[in-house]
Amino acid sequence: MFNDLSTPLSYLASRRSGRPREMVGPGPGPAELDAILALAMRTPDHGKLAPWRFVVVGSDQRDALAALLDRALDQNDPSAGPAHRQKADDFAHHGEALVVLLSAPVIPHKIPVWEQELSVGAAAMNLLHAIHAHGYVGSWLTGWATYDPLVEDAFRLAPSERIAGFFFIGSPGRELEERPRPDPNAVIRHWTPPL
Ligand SMILES: Cc1cc2nc3c(=O)[nH]c(=O)nc-3n(C[C@H](O)[C@H](O)[C@H](O)COP(=O)(O)O)c2cc1C
Image: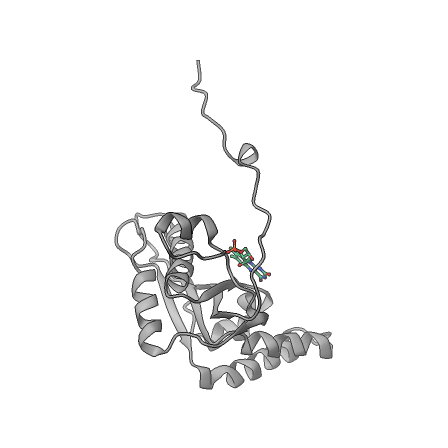
């Protein structure tokens, strides 16, 4: 069983994202989404800078997002064929709710941008946890749209801001499957102090 909410440990041991293209209803309503975002903001943040922003794309705005992605392909990727365009349209319509997370570092500041970006990653993970704790599945995707100048303009990004990802939220349309996880021996080592 994935995203087993019976205890905090069982949840963490079974946490699994959903596949956006397989998401179905129900998804969170506006009040639940507010509660999810409030939890996501309880994130480690050196200097209390809140170097992240959450942009909610309303259900009634998905066609506008699709039109934006289509224009972005026209402008920046004229080689995009019908399959690529269809994929972009699907992307714009995945899930029941959509939040775009922005990295919004405070510059200049004595807290390095790297640390502020780490806080954005932490907010992203916390957002996924908050989605799952509400009984939904989330998914963190980037893809070309994340780096497209027209999309960045449309999300009103300041010059120092960047899209950290698109967070699709819904219910799993089919059973989740395990994803291979790293071998602990490959990623954990014990420090040897210098002599
Ligand atoms: C910054 C970032 C961007 C990602 N972008 C994509 C993406 O564009 N497409 C994709 O299939 N997975 C992407 N992933 C991977 C999925 O979000 C997810 O981490 C993966 O499916 C594992 O799921 P889990 O949450 O169950 O561990 C991205 C992950 C991160 C951290």
